[in-house]
Length: 327
Length: 284
Image 1 (cartoon, each protein chain N blue to C red):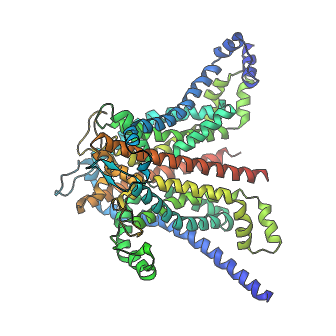
Image 2 (tube, rainbow over the protein chains, first blue to last red; image 1 turned 45 degrees about the horizontal axis):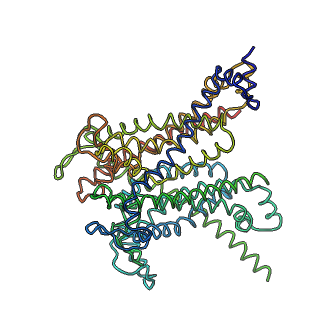
């Protein structure tokens, strides 16, 4: 029967010649292949269209300001002068605060789940943590406004001023909203990502690595800290990059608690704005082509940063997991 | 001397291990705090009117978000219509047909698309679906959400198709089925449960997205008939009401937050439970 031949065709290297092609076409394999290929290619198309649209629609702002867009401190819709520096600063500061809190917390929790907790407990806690990652960001914003901001004003802020007030980061008036508040909310949001990725990376570390360390007389902590963690180092870096990319691009929760002000200040209590929160806040009000174009250029900057970070993170995670499998 | 060192190492061991446990405990308790706080505040403000009435003007108490609930469903329907077929087909390509290089590039791009900040997707949808027609619409919002659905669906579809045992495929082919028939009548049905679960999770994720809707679907205080008008949605309503200075609006925001979170968490827990049960049954 000819259908048997067709089946072998699709498995074997494709035969050339129009007759073979037509025969396979009749059986639909080529058609199905082509149709699904078109859909897969549409993903590449969408992604490149995002870049294209951002590039084209920021044309006005790019030609007007050039590279100075990145180091101008003025953002003035009335005189049509736009510089992104305060927002780039705000984005970096809030993400840095988020990582300072989230990385130690997340890595400790991941270590506990991967190395110490019994598998059952580890799995169910990981399930809960995945749920935490599924909570919409606007909900984090809601809790940020009504829980973290008041706490910042009455408890955290005064405590930091009392103990670390000599540092420039913790001086100046404390309104409750600002860089630090946004950073704290971001930290809560990215911790689940750090935990779930790091845990999986840690679980791929071969068992004999641990056993060898323990057999040499290491304590459990030493085996974890000096053997398992270094082994998984690249993957853990990947999880941190992933979290960083999320923190940089996070919009709603930050917009709701950062205070929305175009400010560069060393004080973490100061209200500010990030790239994403500026777009969210001003885009619908952006009258005038240059204004909108400048906001779209902010979007382009954000896109490129997160694109590069995500790309790096994926490579690191894949590299570690392959390393674990090879051993 | 060495006794002191051993003591030190052992106490460091206990200390650090305890700290890691505390960290895990802290993170998990955050989840329960979020749940508890929302239940407490949202439960106080939630009533039947929330589901059946339109928002009231400022100053009048009461009212609900019926239009936003319907709006969210409309946006999700559009997102499903656009994102699920593309995600499914691309997933089938990656799992069943894909060559080496092109598959790698597609997979990588899919992951990157998944990581694009949602606000940027919003700008993209704005330039394509709002700018040309000069008004906000449900259509534009659904488009933005649909794009976000694609990468999640692709990866889960591919994963579940790969989990289908190879001997099912070989069996079908040995009976003379062509490759596409094998996929359509044997492989896809075998992976059906997982694929649908992945789709539901993708929709649950975009159901809570706010940023891409701000300047695509925008917002609306009234019903929006059809698909071509500004449309209210639960996440955007929560945002608008939470940042407004009125106490009554804050109460409504809590109620909407509870409804949205319940929706998202039920979808997540439900599908994951179904999945693990299916996995147990399948894991022969």
